[in-house]
Image (cartoon, rainbow, N blue to C red; front, top):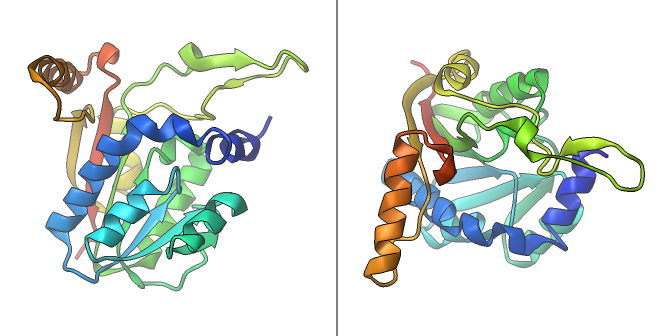
Length: 227
């Protein structure tokens, strides 16, 4: 069962699975807003629900999106986003055309060689002042999310993840092509609602900072082009 079949489902029929990603999307859009001028050119790799592209566009960025799913890209095009069908390890863009590249919950879906190529491609399409930002799950137990197809018996990760990252492993990948300026462990929570909900969000955020898996921690990274 290939990655394409898993993500074709989640990004189309199962798009509701991205509902919990909204705090992460808002955080990434905010970080991009702090680092970039209005009208900056931003590429998001991995369309997901498409909400990150909308948040970035609302901040005044010129947004492009790349994803292997033709249906997901067509949906973004109908929303006025510059969508492209393709893969992270072979970006269909000229060198130096973007001010920022975002890859949130993408690198863990790639095998090691694919990951190396994807990071090299992110560097290629960035200009000399460009930034590369994104997230990966922190120290994910890949075995804990294994499942089996009841029809053919094939075992696979339910989300299609191929790698697990800690800070050192991620920095080794990124440091080949970038200056890594930030690696932080965190949860993405919604800071709204009544006191009880905010207290729960604070608890989850603190536990994630400590790397506790009950809080579903992620690594947020920021990189700059060297020089």
